[in-house]
Image (cartoon, rainbow, N blue to C red; front, side, top):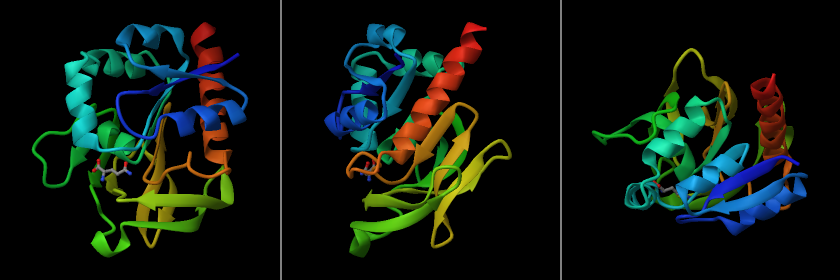
Length: 196
Ligand code: GLN
């Protein structure tokens, strides 16, 4: 069975595990970098990106996470996880893992729209995905290798670059597991490719 880890340092971890399990894979909470060897794909959950980065450094995860991606293993960043994957963050001198070629803006929907729900058309996933946005970022600009999967009011809110996937919303907070299932498929395909 495909094993998918959810980085368990901070944020919405258990809900992702449930969504992974509803999508037919095994879900593991990852609290130590050694556990990365046991999994085929990884979810970076939503939460608070600066806190998450602090904990990534504290528990010595930074290089291990980067290597996980560089080995060709899929990573799915949701909300704060999307921010962690980006090469550039507006207004910040430093970004984090820099695995996806894109520029992002944090808390981009403004205060009055702290959280909202909408039906999104996500290419290859669903035409009416139930997306929950909470103090969400969006993607301002993407490099030529990045495929835009969804936009909301002209802002990019889901994208894919090879074996990396990201979304600005929380796909784990409803019973709509289609985006997680899409990631599970990516992980299955990557696992086959890495084995051959
Ligand atoms: N605003 C958060 C950040 O900048 C992300 C919010 C979320 O993950 N729901 O890290």
